[in-house]
Image: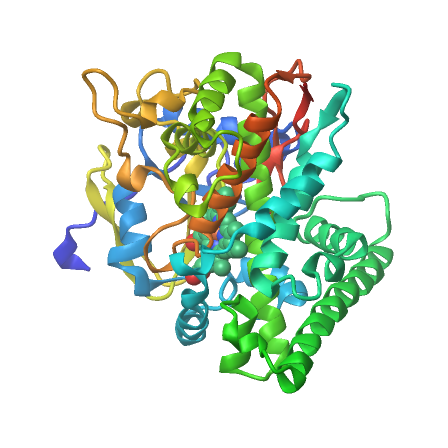
Length: 465
Ligand code: HEM
């Protein structure tokens, strides 16, 4: 490592540099008061460097918001980094080993298997989005009463992801009905540490096991149905471009197929729902944005958008990009060094030299704090301004490169990115075509709720006329 001229990394100022109790206590307090994300952003602004070492209960963690370091971890030096064991341990009992939880060779196999299902050509037929949109509308009170859209976005994103992954031949929504949704939600709540603290551990474990069984049985049932249909049907499922079909072509291992489906369902449900919920919370507070969104969808004459049309909505896209900048769904993430390696920036007092990273070292990054760096996003970075993503009179649109990390990046870039943007654009278009008036019914600002992904604590309370 000598040749890289590494310099020591600045240490986070602390009155307890050995046991790191102070940072731990600050973290617990901030998480409990739903202000951890603002704390991280203020923390980096106050220490004046973008990479530092933090001691949390005696464990040294490198914390960074340096785009060059993120490029190195995600792309240039990808093979030197692995998922944190914590991520796997938390979710494997529910979703098994699949693309989201695998590393190394197994991850490459999973990724290769799933890639074709996410190619653009898979989204030619998007009628299932209209059906789920109509179900979404059915749940909205017609008389303009206050409605919390957040739970409706969760159901919408679960059902559309289920339709996409499994097809709706037998009605994926009936496979993944309310009981599945309840069990799945409870499991994710337990995994993320949210949930009932007043209930005993044993009771929680038993409830978790019961819920996992509901989720596994429902998914297995759907897969077995598809195998059965494949054996007997004259128009086999294999002819359809389905995620499940690709998996059935590759293997008949039921547990393997189930794991890949659940890996995607977990990665895709809360994220998309949170993106919609956060965006609509902001839009509802700003009638000008709603007006502009409605103007953009005018060209469709009230008809549902096609796949191509969802790609040609620059203002809608800018609204979602801005919402994910300010409220990233995965506001914090990390990797473990698989062997001795370096980060290109962060060493020395000015943070401009490489840093030596020993094998086993945990490196965390905060997309939230990164997305609010004033030197990158300018002084108004705490304001919701979709226009920053569009070309302006004398200005190029914002192109933050490695300073925008909402969908991850590099070889592990989110597989569902295009699908998520399409779902969100479609639903937003249909809401804008149907309801001229959208008003916020939430007097407070956005408050973080850190679960498996981050969403708004107060939901998305609005009136739609
Ligand atoms: C707004 C919506 C979404 C956001 C913000 C999001 C965000 C992310 C992020 C940050 C990662 C990288 C995690 C890491 O590197 O540790 C990721 C990976 C992944 N996402 Fe998404 N995601 C979204 C929607 C979806 C959807 C709808 C699906 C599938 C239906 C999906 C499937 C996946 C999968 C399978 C991975 C793992 C890829 C790999 O490790 O190779 N995501 N997502």
